[in-house]
Image (cartoon, rainbow, N blue to C red; front, side, top):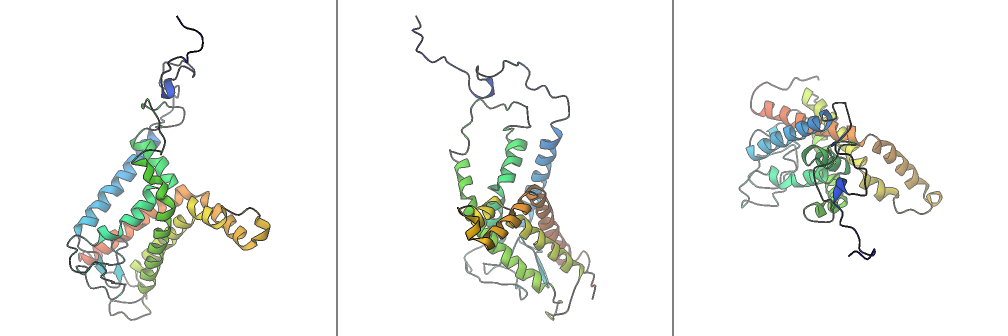
Length: 273
């Protein structure tokens, strides 16, 4: 016999008995599935392409351009790159593609990004698939367990992403040289590199972690006018974080593909001057 002190056994998740008893999974009549489906298709396309290029280990350098997937070159098995840094930190023992050394940092930055979490949580894990649509999972533990616990490393991946962006900026500056490494050159590839690095910087600086680093711990903005101004600028960019995330993802893939076309001899880089 119940004493009245026992807690009732409730179902978990969206089917908890404390919630409205609606048998339908959702009451939406629009094509709510289009957004998560398009997101899944876009992210999957990039994953397939970047995996192919990262393991390809070829056609990533066409003087003076170097693919953003392979820069900086840290292994001895890289193609000679006079137009970019080649530190050879990993020496001759690294036999795999040199892109696998570098891509872990921008990939980790994007995988742990607040916007991308929302994107692939909804599109791949259906958690939840859309607003007002019940997710199929019975339990929700948030990001408190492995592997989602790794999401807390986002702030550290941000620092690495800034360093990678600095190196890609240097690569972009070197793209103003011709194939003989003489300054005063501008080709179609130069423009592509410039657009790509601008979008990468805008996406990186619009990151929530960047906003927190600049002004998140300040108690009195009036005492830090410079940081407050920077915080405001980053906040403005943060409103476009989703758009910048997609734009920079597309631009880095296009920049790599353009270098691939040049390096594989499909056509020569059109020179503007």
